Length: 600
Image 1 (cartoon, one colour):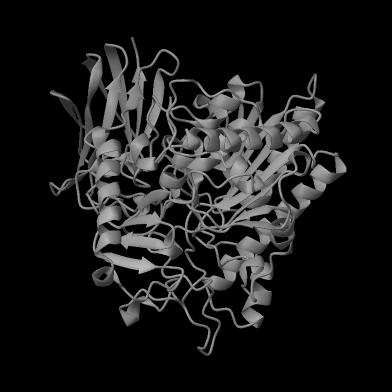
Image 2 (spheres, rainbow, N blue to C red):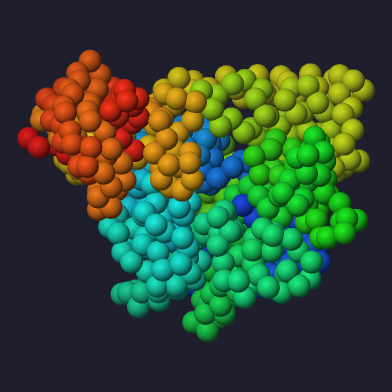
């Protein structure tokens, strides 16, 4: 009975606080969600980095509630899937950035779908990285307006051929469109235009605007003039370019927030800034704290001749299960909602908490059947209650394999405790750099965290043996373009990038299969290419073959032709699609780009 009364008091306090804020807000708030790529916790001046210039982010941090114990996945697509669904990434079918494991399951419900259904105008600009073909594209998952790169970054194999961050071609609502200017500038300019259009529409429809920059992800292409000040201060390359890319992001954020002020939208707009994983190049001379040559993954220091980056004392970086791989910044500002200003929340929070929080703040209905792993942050950030957060346990892992493996690169987090790979234990309150493994001294804590992990693994692993298939011949999209980026591995590696000897440009002798779902039986035409069709690159092969399920067909081709065309009668259903381009010397590789059309 006492527990019931306690919970009732907490619920009433939170409801009163939230309703009071809502009463002072003239309408449902807009949402501006900004996520940058590969920028770590230490890559912001407000967090103690004395070298980097981020005045706009520093100001935003002062105006916002800061989640200082906020965690994401250690790499890109995984974080985005959890952010968009409010669920553990591996539960949604995403546990890698390539190999068909970065595609969000069809049955998942996304943040933009919920906001669109709730009456919001939805738009995204930048990096999606959760599927490039129907029905996985942003335009299929709830975004009414989108301007995006394909794949996981500019210059990766699905991206428009030849993109290099400057004057690129991106996909607007699924169609290629040439742009002028630097990538980050383009995405922010289009976001601003989207907001303007939302305000110009009848009734000034509330907007949900998602800006997901590909910067400062590699390649570190940026205007040399932006990097020059960092080089003069002793920042080595490529870190100087990395910092310059962040400074450019910061400038764009400042301009967009000033625009909200000018249009008197700031009070009624929830602004969230976060990043997708730990730093990629902001620590250590090679972007790795301590340097790989030292054989250790320890916190970076600044006592070397040149600036060695800054990790805020954390161990490791992007891709790691240690703190520096997944603890990132998260600032939340909402003046009209009376969220605390210049306030720190130190309890354990995560990317999947943002969806349930935004649904509550924006009065968007959550379907009763939708199960979320995240928890609403409203009572916590307002200081009304810490219930559900004081003894919370969260799991982070970095799988990046075809099928997830138990305990692989895993952190089980509870309070100050971090159980790493089921064997190492750290108390980050006493040892923020995770330098002292104290597992032998705390068997009870080890057992508690292991027990949680066993239960968690049983919950999330039910579909680990399944593929997320690419859909062929759907009535809504009878023609689909496939890319080797989504090959499930048939060889040791796949050409996920455009450039280099192991990239598509090097014509590597690699192959893999696409997991596909033939939506309707019929005649299908397969067009095999070495590059995107418009590039017209010779196939340099003498024979071409398509194998799909138990069906296959092989033809002889001219090595100078840029396209091999094969037709097959296909039944409906899920299966595997292989392609082969055989060279004159008998060696073969897959067709890196394939268009599949349902003819009849």
